[in-house]
Image (cartoon, rainbow, N blue to C red; front, side, top):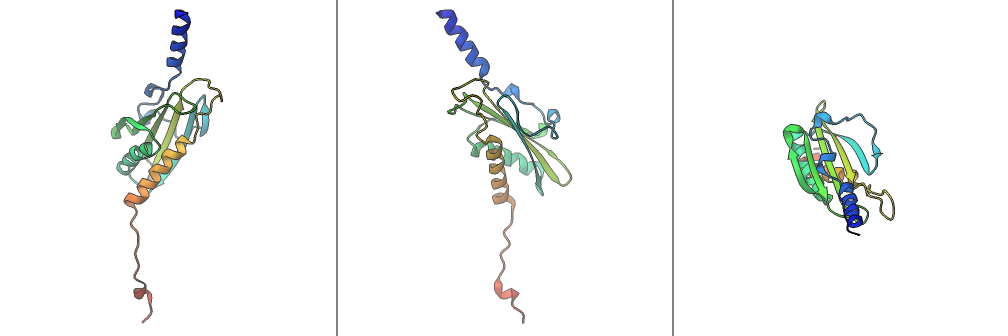
Length: 161
């Protein structure tokens, strides 16, 4: 009985998503790789943020992870990465997500990789929950609210004299 319990515990621990599952540097990330579901409980999404620099996107990545319910695990602007962890959900023991960014022709290219635990629950592999989209949406919202100037026009200035 004790061996069965230890075996079960070992399998559960092995299935958890860890920071080590994700690249630790933007140089190790292939921005041209396929997107969507790319492995067992792995999802990837690439987006280009035009008009935003690496410093702005770095801050947005931390906010985007937070707005999607992830707690910050590791962030390093010089390595172009921010990693967060989301606790237990209805379908996963945990989810790890990494946001990677690099400059690209007056824009910043971003890749989000989300890895769920490698368990087989009642509903199979359903990690997605749109984690990559939720993180990117939080990033866009932060960038738009923080760095976009709103043009206010006085209508009386538009009248012809």
